Image (cartoon, rainbow, N blue to C red; front, top):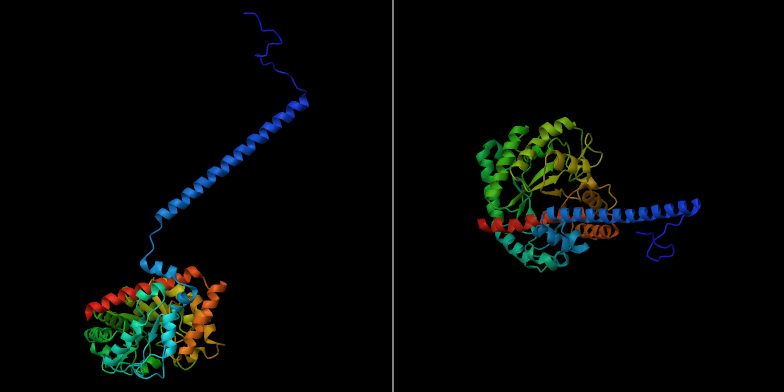
Amino acid sequence: MSPAPPDDPFVRRRVRRPPGEELAARRRRAALLGVVGLILLIVLLRAVACGGDDEKAAKAPPQTPAERIAGSLSSTQLVGQTVIAPFRNAAPGEIPPAIRSAIRAGRIGGVILFAENASTLSTVRTLTAKLQRITRPGALNGVPLLVMTDQEGGTVRRVTDAAPRASAAVQGRGGIGVVQKAGRDSALALCSAGVTVNLAPVADIGTGVLSAAGRTYAADAPTAARATRAFTTGAHEGGIAVAVKHFPGLGRAAADTDATRVRIPTSVDTLRTQDALPFRTAIQSGAELVMLSSAIYSDLSPAPAVLSPPVISGELRGRLGFRGVTISDDLEAGAFAAASSPAQVARAASQAGVDLLLYARTTDAALAASRALTSDLRDGRLQLRTLRAAVARSIALRTRLAGTCRATR
């Protein structure tokens, strides 16, 4: 076959370029291929990332009902569910307007009752029914309020016709059966009157002011641990929750934190091996709440335990594995007299990991704390995720107690 003529349009002829043009062309082709490769790489990485997100989303556990409620709350309502308010100097069985308004706005999540509010079971029953009937905003309207009181026995007994009448010291000397019966009988009585949390038992050991007042079961850890377990078990049989107190142990205190600042120089080793034992036992027995001490434990933290992340996150949640609800002791106590305001103490406690902020003296302090923390949340000084987790724990407990307590009536 003869070669095509030189001017045949169907024949592609290679035209030699000067060396400089050929090199430039190669560089342009290489650059273009590099850009295309980079684009493909970015697309691939995005696809992998999206796939990873989808995989994480698929593996993430579904939200619980309590988590969904917590996620639906406004800043005011979310903060409010961490506040427990008192109402002192009120007529027995009556709800002051400030408390009623705060409940309606979602500014508080529960109340603490004293003998002046309701010293008999019948009066308590009437009062708690009124409290639970108050309309609350949004998803909170289906969530019962927490209603708590101190019913340890002995000198700390708010409801005069409810068990236990004997002090913790007397119960402890009577043996485990006596202590468990005290826990059960007090729970049945309180539950029948609409109280869902007993701020007991006292799990502290030692020979300090609490022991002198008969508020501890024993001075040694093993005996106190057995009694604490017995009271907790009895309370669960009666359908209510307990708040074991005062972590990491207040039994060695030489003064009362309700009145003054207290420092406990006990070593970390002793706190962990002895003082923590009754708390560990109670947690293993299903204690729903642990109350933090207002004393300072120098070897653990320079701050009061209730304001100390090393105590709450490190010792209680980390070392003891507690997954329930943390609650403060009274944040208006004499231990905090040097603080500039209730808001300052509330802020420190919340940031340290306290789920429920307890006020036992004035409604004003509780509501001031609620307002201040709401402002902090909006300004980003409180972590939204952490606060929602705390509120979800509280709401889950409140919902569950509504069922267990009702079942025992």
